[in-house]
Image (cartoon, rainbow, N blue to C red; front, side, top):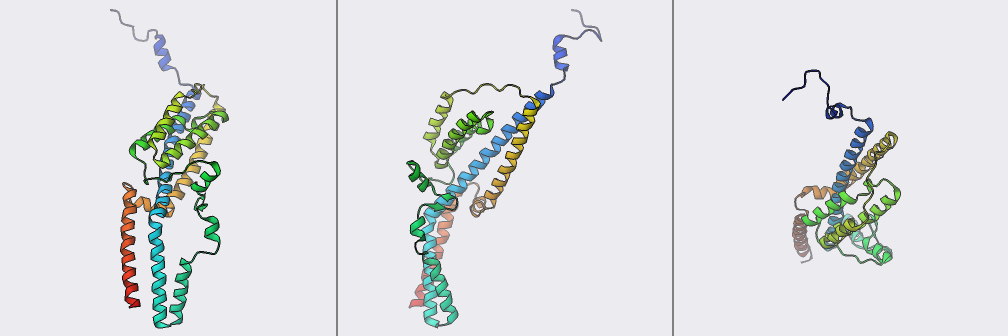
Amino acid sequence: MTQDAPGGPTTRNDEEQDAPTRPEARLDKAVRAAEQALIEFEIALETFRVEVENFSRLHHQKLGPMYARLDELDAQIAEARAAATGDPEDLRKAQDARALVMPMPGVDELFHDWMDSDGLSPEAAAMLTDQPVRAPKRVRPSEEARKLYRELARKAHPDLAQDETERARRDEFITRVNAAYGLGDVERLRELAEEWSAGPVPPEQQLSESEELYARLEWLSQRKELLTAVAKELEESAIGAMLRMAPEDPDRLLEEIAEQLLAQVAEREAELSGLVQ
């Protein structure tokens, strides 16, 4: 077997390996990496947003009556204390406590189940669109629901679209995915996965010109800044702060708060009983 002499002619493969990578190819690789990083960030953000929204709604549904009972007991305690002392300051406190319990005339009737902290409530939106509404069963969807959601988001995310038609198709689809995930509806997520697999396959992306790739990177950067602001707002919200207290089991946190509220109700009832005897 002969060996190539040092400094002899190189083969075609050697030339291809030694050839410098085209700038456009490196830029294209950076764009694809930025897209995937942004999608993973959006998946994490949407996951947290769903938990914040579900916690808020379940908190209101399950614990709202307990908070209302505490407010009523506080009003009754203040009124009993004012009746016993006749002190003007106690009378003022009793009036203030009762005012917190009394609804604003006409407002509750007008906006009942129509407005929440985010605007139009899901129930009201359903009435306007003739869509059924189901309350979430848990703060955090099951692990299977989370897995299906992550897989669908990575495949069908609108940030992967290269034209407005494809973006609109993906936007509509991901909206349905987000709704199913918010409810923890595994069966619906499975159906959506089958729908996406059976749908049209987008054409393979061709290498873009440098100007288009730079514009894409700039858009991805701006999108990341926007989402970072949204994430910060969620994390700093009252519900977000509560969720950070129990990152492993937020549903258990609701049970713990309920136990604390029941104890407070019992204390107030005992205090009221001592004042009216």
